[in-house]
Length: 194
Image (cartoon, rainbow, N blue to C red):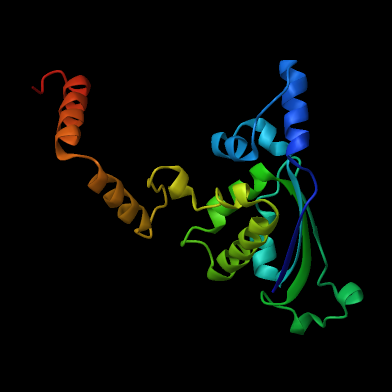
């Protein structure tokens, strides 16, 4: 596996666009843009070059959407020299992604999940580590979806990490506050309950 990440744009472009729209100087930081997931975060473009197994490349290509470009070397015999009987899911391919910060966050949310293929998690973690070198604010937001959803998991067969997260949050909430909130919620959702 080989992963390189290069950041193509910078925070100046983010502030230039916001400043123009608001017709005043912007003080928006990348950290705030990534945290809030506001659309100007998409001004931050990245080039990711990888040599990865074919099966991982296929997983990453499933995230392709408008404004995200994937370029992958072929396993065709006439292009790669690989004999058809030698090509399998582990055959390395050269995969390049040209994408913005929002796309990287979406990929991380799905592919850092412990329910994702382990090889894919390793590649996305390597991407996250490389992003850390060029944009630490973005890397700090690259987590599985359950982190963003406050510990809630919508997988059919959850891994259980979300329950550990919820337990940690619950331990930080004073018992009286929780009881009051719960009673208030039950009363509003079912007026017959007192």
